[in-house]
Length: 274
Image 1 (cartoon, rainbow, N blue to C red):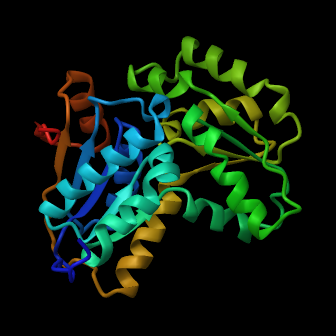
Image 2: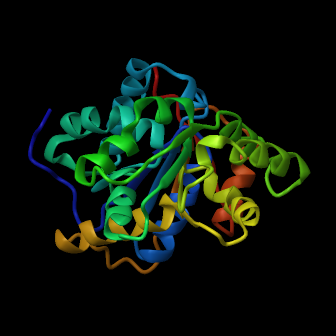
């Protein structure tokens, strides 16, 4: 499957996640790279990925990547921490030279390692991401002195997917998690789920500026721009028309899409599992 690439600079950037979380990454990429066309796929039929087996996630990732290749994507961004931790190597091998593949974990790890002041880096994410231990492994592999206490926060992604953020219910759940003893002595916190930028203000409110809060959206967008620039793949299009797909249509997803991308958005359902 590793045939020679046939993408061009004007080809789209493919971005996928289990639901709306990856829209935070797509939004950041569109701001950093306004000339790029985006193709977004939300696998709403299988969310949340954090509760699925590794084999299932690998299969979802490969099938969605095939969908992106069929749309001539020059870059595929795995905009999900769980999928990045379990499916990145499989996707990279499957895609080969047909597109560049970027996950949401490595750019954040690189950012942390550059900052010597981050010595105890907390991580919150889905059960799948935390169970993989991917952030701790990658950070400590390059700097064994760093501490990386991690906490699974399984209610948060589903809560956000249902539109519960920036209200009393979300604050109660967020505060309950962040009060965990595991996070007592951290100096920074990685929001290891692309849904979590939507609750970043509430997390910042809890910590009152005492620690650094990191989310992947902006960091990954910068990495995508760097990869495209190095490979001379930056688009010169002045009016890119983004496309948004889901595996199971919901009104709430369409409204979330319009929240991030103003104007008329046509959400298309694509049953890629047939």
